[in-house]
Structures are given as structure tokens and as C-alpha cells.
Amino acid sequence: MEIETEIKYEVNNLSEIKIPSGFLLGEGREKNSFIDFGNRLSKRGIKVRVREYCTKITITEKKKGTFIGGIKEVPERNIDLAKGSLSEVLDFFKDLGAREIGYYEKENRVTYIDNEDCLYCLDTILDRGKERYFVEIEAAEREVIIEKARKLGLDNPELEARIMEKSYFEMFARKR
Image (cartoon, rainbow, N blue to C red; front, side, top):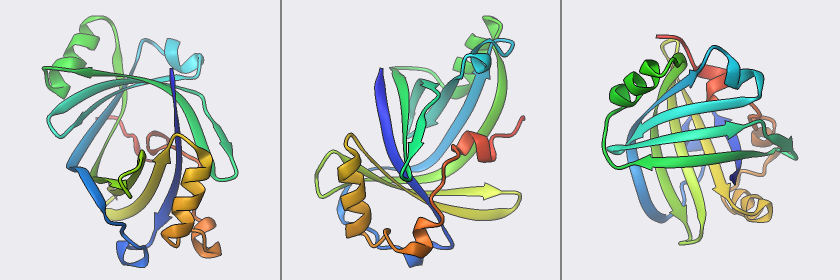
């Protein structure tokens, strides 16, 4: 199981942050659905997400993570599917007894920073009619995340006060 290591900030608007140059990995609407089998997974601190992004379906198992010094570390395992749609995969799980426990969508832009193994994500989520903006930096090493945040001007006290501990699921997932 891999560890997703990230820092996430909520910003008032995208103009208050520096957007780094880098290799654009993807841009578009991301659809996220979470499933459970009668709360059996939730009781064990496990979330299962089915995500559709850039014509790819990914099933992710996420376990309870830690939040230390503004950086979140979450054990996760991903399986990419070669074929299928979000609705087809959800129907498959429903046939096995699962139910959808939450759903959210976001506009997403993902860039590699400085051609390193460090991702920079700009996310826009519509929350009760209002757009909310988030910046995420993901890397394997905490030190790389801290260095990139500093380099991008995200280490100022005002933004540090807006570091998010909660996941998007905890903040935005709604039943459909």
C-alpha cells in the first residue's frame, strides 16, 4: 500500500497564488463516488472511492491517515481500469451489495512541478452554489512538499492558517 503525502490549502481565488511552470498531466472534471457495504468499511476506517477523470476509472482504497505539521499522509491503494464508466463500475459494486455513501465533482488541473515527482493540483469545487478553490502539493517526501510550498509562496502565515486537514469527502460528499 502506498502513502499519499500532501498539503492542501483553501484560497480565496486563484490569483493570490503563483502557478508553477511544469508538465501538464491532466485537466478537466473529476467525478468521485464513495461506496460501502453496510458500513462495514467505514467502521474499520476504510473509504473506497471510484473516480472518473480524463477518460480513466480508478478504484482507490483509503485508510485512516495522519495529519502532522499541516501535511497529511494517507495509506492508499489504486487500481486503474482499462475499460468502463463510473456508472458501470458503480452498478457492478451495487450488484455485489454496495451502496453509494457520497459523491462530489471538481474541476481539476494537475501539473508536475520542475519535472520532479511532485504534483501541483488546482481544484475548484462548487459548494452550495459557490465556487471554492484549493491548491494541493503531493510528493513522496514531506521535505519536498515543504520546499515547493515555500518556493510557490504558500508558506506565508495567512495561507498557513488555511491548510485543510479534512478530505474533500469529509467536506463535500453528498448523497445523490
